[in-house]
Image 1 (spheres, each protein chain N blue to C red):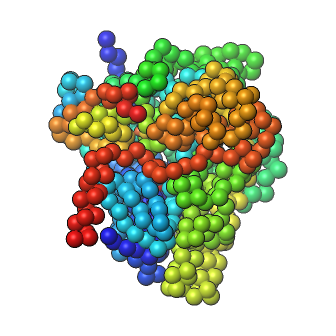
Image 2: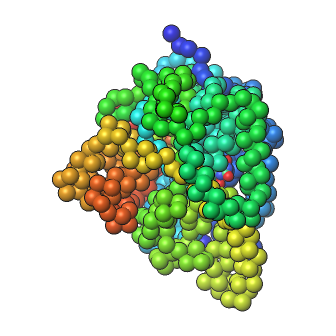
Image 3: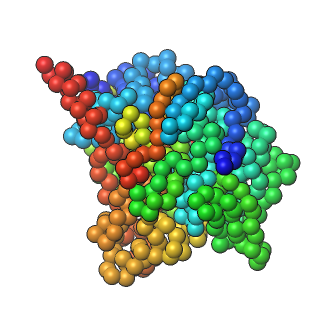
Amino acid sequence: MDKYDVAIIGAGPAGMAAAAQASDLGLSTAVLDEQIRAGGQIYRDVDKAAPQRGEILGKDYTDGTRLTKALRQSAVDHIAGAVVWAIEDEFRISYTCEGRGAQILADRILLATGALERPMPIPGWTLPGVMTAGAGQILLKQSGVVARGAVLVGSGPLLYLIAAQMVRAGLPPAAMIETQVRGDTFRALRHLGGAIRGWPYMAKGLKMLAEIKRAKVPRYTGATEISIEGDGKTEAVTFTHKGRRQRIDCETVFLHHGVVPNAQAARSLGVSHGWDAAQSAFVPELDEWGQSDVAGVFIAGDGAGIGGAKVAEHTGRLTVLKIAENAKRLSTQDRNRMAAPLRRALARELAVRPFLDAAYPPYSAALQPTDSTVVCRCEEVTAGSIRGYAKIGCLGPNQTKAFGRAGMGPCQGRYCGLTVTALLADANGQSPDETGYYRIRAPLKPVTLGELAAMNETTQDATE
Amino acid sequence: MKTASPFLEIESGPRVDVTWEGKTLSLPEGSNLAAALLAAGVEVFRHNPVSGAPRAPFCMMGACFDCLIELDGVTRQACMLEVSEGLVISRPSEQGGA
Ligand SMILES: Cc1cc2nc3c(=O)[nH]c(=O)nc-3n(C[C@H](O)[C@H](O)[C@H](O)COP(=O)(O)OP(=O)(O)OC[C@H]3O[C@@H](n4cnc5c(N)ncnc54)[C@H](O)[C@@H]3O)c2cc1C
Ligand code: FES
């Protein structure tokens, strides 16, 4: 079995930057990603798509080729198309690649698993035709597919980005139904200093808004009571705007109200997490080098707390400095010297976050959905059922499993975990930290018997 | 009657034949399978095993499992596969694949 100084899970900006740096510092390095090509979510398939549709996707996207190139030119083993489903015993990593199970060993683990879209349970969100905005963007990046007459629902910079990209592709959205309200803008103004320091982001945001306006995309801000209607598929979005009920016919809806750390792997390793009120999400507890409370486990990028692609890149490199010191490849002095410019760049990039978090908070009705709304997509458990469990004494998400099947489907709570925590916390008058989150165990993704059988063959070959 | 898909391909390239639910579809070679099926007008990928409700891709990043299909007798996530000549795929048979 191959053994590495460090194994990095995830080849997004954090993982790619970290891997190239680790290898530069003389660490034997593997990077595993379930995607076939390096890039992560922001730079998905960038090597393939940048030449074809770079104009539509913009420079912030094509810039990703800088990182994929550095990764390609490094001595890193990039194990592509590898779904990591278990990390155990300091550390044996089990993954599936091309239908076969396989394993590698590593002394240290760097989790660069990125973010997931924040679950947005609103009535009708399980209908075919409803997708996340990130999914809409992946369709465009990876496949050059755009939905005609789609309606965008929610809030946040990513919603404007995809709208602008759809405009550039010649298929502007039919409407944007936005959930932020005027009060959010006022609250955000308290963070104006940060917004000014993060001016390049603000300027890009304004430019995207101008593109959306020029394409005459109707925007409904402060929308409430949003619901998706249709018989077996999406037919319309209905909502209340300025006191009036509105209906927009459409076949496709893209939902978005922020992204949250993808903590599945970190939680399976027992890394402690705490509630971050500004980001309305659980984030792993890390020191200033991205080191967790589990020996040998480090986290960088959006999985460590949402900061975006540039922050991911910087934290990836920063964390590797600590890993290299830990592996005796870098003196403490050199580590600190190399970290200083990275920390300055990080502070610059993070300056705009408090403004954005306040200006585009999650849609409150999707944090506390109505009783009849499905919360757990896999097992079709409703918000009302979860509230019912609380009434008969259920305090935490792991207990819900004794009452029903929420979180027990194949997605392992990825799209219901935060909602279940929020519902139970509210019903029991407790904080999210007191309420806790699902316990996540390997396998992180379903593994088939065939894949396991193939793995046994390879491990036996190796020991013979 | 099948209506035209709202998902449009903005470029064209070589296509290959794939069998979906016994019917032949011509899909862009090497493209993402879930994206290609959506653009070909496939509206329902699987049915939820609990309620039987129709489902289609939601996340496109391997996290939601609503794009499950069956390939060579194995349930797979269509959004994690690429189109290649001669794929024989269908809706997952058992319990929506979960
Ligand atoms: C769908 C989506 C689209 C986004 N689009 C944009 C955008 O266009 N612009 C923008 O600024 N921000 C975007 N974001 C925000 C994004 O989180 C950050 O910008 C940036 O991609 C974070 O980088 P990262 O390296 O931390 O993680 P990511 O780029 O998310 O990379 C994480 C990688 O880890 C891999 N991975 C995770 N778990 C496993 C596992 N168990 N086994 C194997 N591999 C695994 C994933 O396949 C992924 O490639 C998007 C987020 C999402 C969820
Ligand atoms: S669309 Fe979510 S797993 Fe494929």
